[in-house]
Length: 492
Image (cartoon, rainbow, N blue to C red; front, side, top):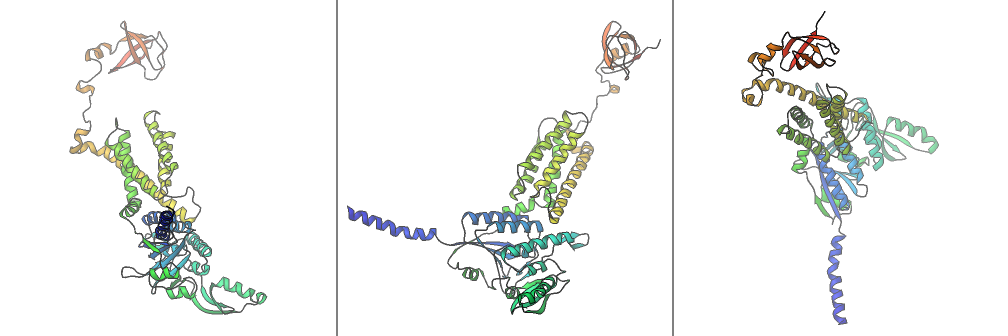
């Protein structure tokens, strides 16, 4: 019996060896960052990075090939990459028949957020100065925006051990960058840093020798793969992902390659300015129609669907929380309260519209109050999108209210006939109107200005032209219109 037990334990141990090896195997994720940096890419990268963190991957290689894109999306991506602090993150600027082999603008910002940078031969990185779309096309961003992005890329370079001067020069064209040999060691610094080194040279025994200009003032810095490696920014010039894995010591690791799905691109489309504006306009117009119509019908369903799409798509972007939804619901309730309960249109209605607009704006951004210039620009853009959509919806609603009765197709949906007195419609009979007109009586209750009076022995509800009358005063009927009997005081 003991023999069989020993044999069974031995078999179990042998069979468990491959399972343990598989469980302890190294795993690497490759995630592409290609094309324009936009909102859909943020959604894809958030899901991909979270998956790599949950699977406890050993490294993430970001396959970068981009001319740049949105600054806010790029900054969100740098935050995502920085959040994977327990995983070795690598930016690999690749080249293949379908790529351009560049990491420019927002791509450079993203590259500096990784722990290491590798570049394929023939690739380049730089030209990260932010731009804005003006009346005449692309224009250089304001100094405030440039300063904010310059500080951010410098902070990323400092955190991950890259040359800060090189990072700044990729954003700021005013910096002059020059080679300098400090005790024979090659460095690249701006003019201010070189002057500081020269001041310290005597006291610290430094040998300072200036070299060639790497980037003259007035030009943005862009470096080739060879220059990036020469100046110590890139960890190596490698041809493909296999060589990168070998350089990381992960040549035998299991590689999981991820790619953007149609759903990611759909979210990017839905959160674009054009689509967002369209859904807000349709949603608000449908909401106005529903509020001003009896019961609940198709317009209400359309409004719910439109706003659900807006909030759901931005929720996938990570910018919608309970606050935005609560503000929207409160604003909607205040608007309904103003229209149906409170007479006129005042504080409740204005506050309701303000809360609805505010909730839509906040759903499109991660912050409440902007701290940086790029956040201020994003807030202005979001506010402009929502305000223009709101004004457009009011205009469309007014146009529909005027034009629908004129359109033959909608004739059956609108009430065109009016039951007027000249057509014989009245609450009182014609005989009653003739009988009361010109008659006299006396007031029974105080008229303020409505009350009861006795006319020809009959109790009648009457109304004055605004004046108050006391009981016992003599009155005369001057007009009868439906149930409205208008009287005045008889002068003695």
